[in-house]
Length: 300
Image 1 (tube, rainbow, N blue to C red):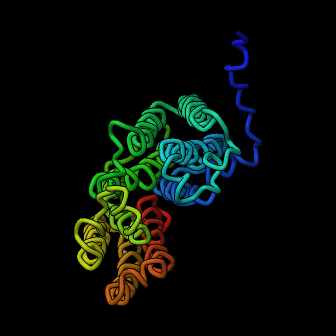
Image 2 (image 1 turned 120 degrees about the vertical axis):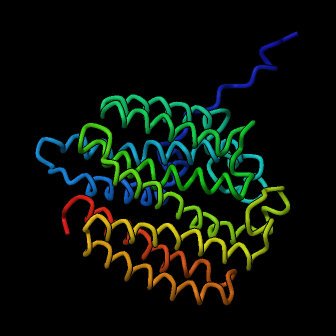
């Protein structure tokens, strides 16, 4: 009997174009923006820190965020085979276990890069990768919970990226005021992630994903998301005034006021206006992050 007939040929090495698609470059902007906010909040000059700046941008975007996308697509490959069969893994363009290998290689390279950028950046990289794997991989699969999943993404995309930006520029642990603002904006990002779940309510219900729009209903989830985004910013404004950063506080106040105007429209029909709010209200939110960072760094 010819046993060689039962041995499958090894899966071909995927084309770089397909690997890039797997890493989803469009998702890299939020953590890279938060990283930039971290750089500004540090108040440090760029002299002699250009490598750290470049390495941090690479780490926050293509490396950790890109790796998280590969992890997510690998563990969702069976669902994607039904809902989005054109994606690299279910389409067979990234065959065999190469999707998992890309995620593992990305994790290893991220750790190596984080190690070269300093102790606290390395710690943040470890936490970010743990969040990425825990979000998608069993037995945790934080994404199945509408409370835990958005919190993990908010911490990773906003908090850890901001922390990394501040840490690479100072070479150590960021200032306590910066850490407090990082935490508050990370909490607020939970609301942004909840709004992102509105587009998948039907699919989440069918797959047993307990997102807040599924468990609370569209209207209640929208109101909660707005409150979760607004309240941390109110606290940030109060703290900025207390710290004597009036220009920064006024800028964040104006941007929050814009968000509240947008929120009023969002709440009239959350399903219809959630994508619109993501382009208007969320933009105001992240501009507020930058305004706070500029104040903390002494730029305004």
